[in-house]
Image (cartoon, rainbow, N blue to C red; front, side, top):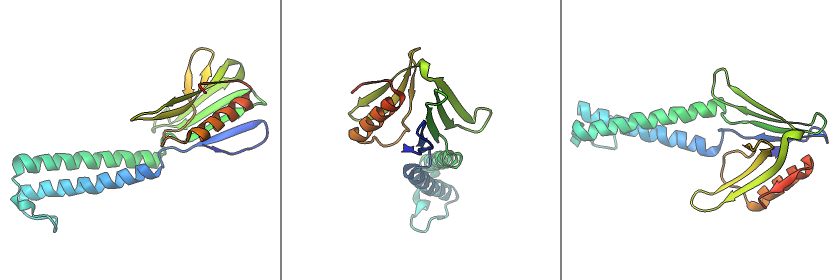
Length: 186
């Protein structure tokens, strides 16, 4: 999250969406890997090498060639899906904390359609605290939540590689100080 300070009464944290290196990497790997599988499967069907570095005429189409074709189609489909999320920049947006209007605005981009722009607005009087959730292990989770008085927990941090504990704790405590509310989970 970046902080673009407009004035002392507004704190805005920019959230990066799906335009991350890992998504570009996986879209390319899946596309080229899937194309290789698809061409190998098609080569086994026509008994003609479409890839110069593999002799796929030795594969029988049933079942190896058919399975290779299926895996190729699935991998290319996944790469197209990831490429579209990158193109539409799903998940990008910002968190805006406005002391003057006493409002918190959480804005995100979604998939195209009538709910493309996701806008959540909360008044300061409905906010209970900022919660820091840290889970280590195989699938670590480090998230800052905005807790409302009606027991909702709205995540404020983007989905990405887990950041250092020090960075996360500093961001959470800075936000709690700015909003003048409690910080839970430390």
